[in-house]
Length: 490
Image (cartoon, rainbow, N blue to C red; front, side, top):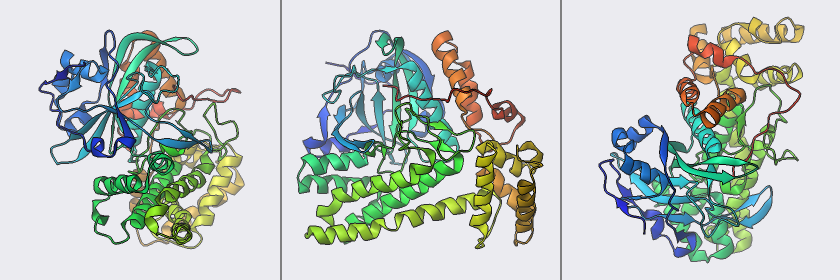
């Protein structure tokens, strides 16, 4: 039996998910580890959760982060869910993660506290339930970068090493990440209920989700249709933000789409350098299903799978329910395009809408693709009004485009200063470039030097600052004929 910890860290747990029908989870303690050591603590996140950062550095709390002890009030469990993985439906579940419970902050807000890499569960499917240090640090870096960029995301509170080695292609240092999320309810959670539960269990999950994430619609007569609509809105906005920053998730399976609208699962994700809509980083995405340009389409596909699970709640007659769902889903791409177009206007300092704006935007993107321009640095150069810093300067088509764009800015009612301010708030000066992330991980994992990562995370926390410190993080990697590849990290 794992002992409960009654430290002064500020844990304030509730366990509302555990009050759902037993179908949705399995009570599960983390598997203890030999000699945990705290290597990363997100002190700002800790404070926002109502936790005392100093107490979290003490031995008692380190044992909590490792799963050796439980915070007072925790009721650990492994969540059950299913999912379409690369289009194929399968039973899944938390195979290497345990939800400790829900931290209630000083404002009454509820956040899941999950240990990732905390040992085998009934859903492990032959896996060891553990995680390696590199992938856990990678999730920490990227999730904090996403937070800095203003993109809804799960976050990372802490990383501990376990003192154990885990076997992948080689022996690697083991680690556990403490993940914080609005919740871990996924499209796949609903798919699991629809496949293996009864209508009343689907309803229980939907009612719980509404109460937790969309309480304003609880009294709606058509609240389940409104739930579908609200989730669609969240996803349309989220995917647009991914596209506007060059983020590629890499594994958009339905179990990795959170109903809350947060980005979840940072395994094979990466940010695009050279602009190419066909960019794929994931080593297992050989067909490009989750390529950059496919992300909006895949999100729509995933939402259709979510809608299917709600059919028993939308109408008693299945044919009528399908008709209702299809009509609602038909609006998704329009919602996405509206968010994307608005965001692209902002990236170019356009303060109002004109019919020709989309053609202006697409012309720039076409040139960027043709001339292999860097996505982030191109918009950074335009923000700083330094077209000479782009690879396209001197090319007649780009120079003509630049003149048209400048004329577009001059004829809008706002000032050029207002346009530039909008661009500064919309175009990050820095992103977690792949070579910088790898540099940080190599130093931490191979040399036990976390200073490289700490500096990178600090810079990424202020991506729109345009400081001199950003300059070195804007530089591109040396050219290589070997494409960058990322892995699921299991």
